[in-house]
Length: 214
Ligand code: AP5
Ligand code: MG
Image 1 (tube, protein in one colour):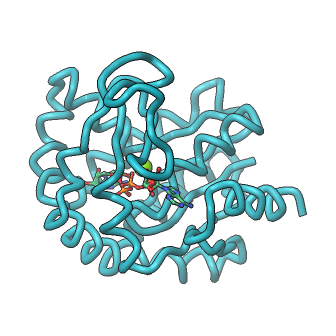
Image 2 (cartoon, helix red, strand yellow):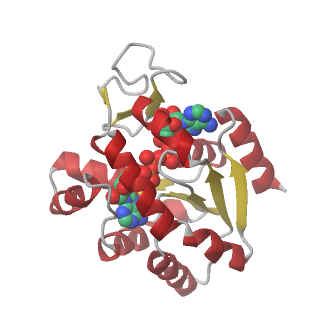
């Protein structure tokens, strides 16, 4: 099962992708998590990506495409994978299609988690992320058991640098300009499914499972 999670920043792509990956035992591939791990390790890729991410801008396509193309040919992707935060532009989507075509494969589902902009800024200011294991929490809806400490790995949870309200606004503008056209792209391929992401997380997940198993 090869799945793309689409949706605005903060729509819940990561939250749902982790659950899908757990239920179907397929890797969760988040380009945002990969960049944050590189930033933390101080790699060249991380340094380049950070200048764009901190401004709420997309990292250039050429830095992303190869990264994903190399990842999806790994052994653990044989039974599928869930892409979270990629593709984010039409050229990225085309590059993904080409990489898959070389393997005689194609994507099965593009799931759009639909959340209006008005909900997003609130959600993001409450989000706390573990930069060590990628777990995400929310100060109101999913608090950590101990304040400031990741339940999963015991490291510190923080407000992401790009979750400041003004950066979130910029990310929303970028989303509408560059990423939303993918909804039409996958609709034309006949693999687009939309879910209402404003409902509780468990309800959203149940609907996604229903779509995947229909
Ligand atoms: P990335 O890390 O992908 O960020 P994003 O797309 O902006 O998405 P988020 O991770 O912020 O949101 P999410 O949809 O995963 O929501 P979450 O589940 O955490 O990318 C960051 C940056 O990296 C980009 O801006 C760009 O610069 C760069 N980048 C990454 N990929 C790239 C690419 N392919 N090309 C170019 N650049 C790239 O949920 C959000 C919050 O809401 C959480 O607190 C969560 O607990 C809560 N929540 C989730 N679901 C619900 C619900 N149903 N009800 C209530 N609360 C909920
Ligand atoms: Mg995410």
